[in-house]
Amino acid sequence: MSMASLVMGKKSVVMLVVYALVMVAVVVGVDVTIFRNFMLARFLANVGIVLLFGAFYLRFLRP
Image (tube, rainbow, N blue to C red; front, side):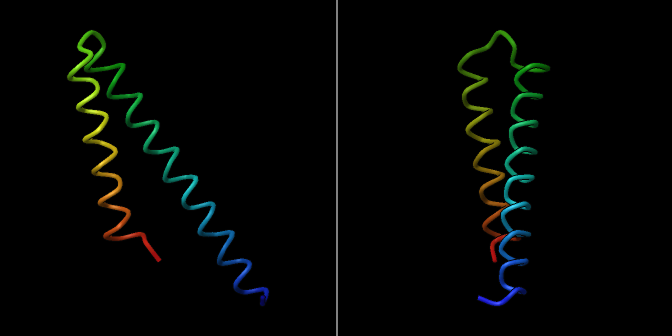
C-alpha cells in the first residue's frame, strides 16, 4: 500500500465517524426538542432520520 492510499483511507474513516456523530446529534436533538413524550412518533422520526442520512450518504458521499 502506498502512503497516499493510507492517507485517503484515514480521511474516509474520519469523515464516516464525523457523519455518524452528526446523525446521532440530529436524532438526539429531535428527540429532546420535539418528541419528548411521544414514543411511537419518536421511533418513526428516528427511523426516518436514519433513512435520510443513509440515502444522502449513498447518493453523495460514497466513494
